[in-house]
Length: 322
Image (cartoon, rainbow, N blue to C red; front, side):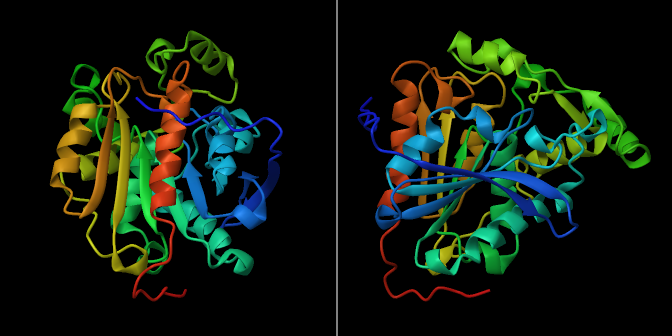
């Protein structure tokens, strides 16, 4: 599999931290990676996964920035730097709240007048990938119409067959989430299944910000969104992205044991979109961005190339305005 060369080490990046204030006045930690503003070709808003945060993505964001793609990322509510006490762990709110935070992030980027001519892409990993797909189906139409393309890394559409909970367990959990929505529950992920690089697995396991905890409301909402995608209730339609065209790229490891590649493949076959691609990485695990050796660079190259190939001027298209 072809890879791109690593960026020269002397090309300095600009990395900045900040705060996103949501519409319910909650501050969320943000981080931005960019290279020379004169070479800026595209912008990317990134949504991380379960028991994860934006400082866990290794060389992915710097690699994209070196290709002229400015990366905007944020720790989701209940995760990463936003956890200020144990009760904050996994306290994300329901799907309306979670996707409301994503809308706030997208609006903050779209409001940057000096970058208004630069196309915007949206990407998510794992739980965040499921959120991005759900948003592409159900998010505010006026926001979706300003997104050039959707990308997902190992999106959560379903769990593998051998790790799915009993339907009775899911129903009981839904009932409990209505009664005790903020009741926390540890849902420990198997570290060895995350990545084929054992050092990456060790670092993730020892990271106190990767706390494996979700509220009942958080876990139920996550399963509901996945079910909506798998069972066809959340449908991404053609013609709803920037320029009246929907564009979707999915990257997935066939060796993923955290979420189901087969479920994603079935979902992809049903997707009625002209510009779509499912990139299967044979034998790779869940964290494609951290796979060993040149694999992580291959993944970053594939993501960057798909974005750059779609970052030129739109033919006969008028940009919708908020």
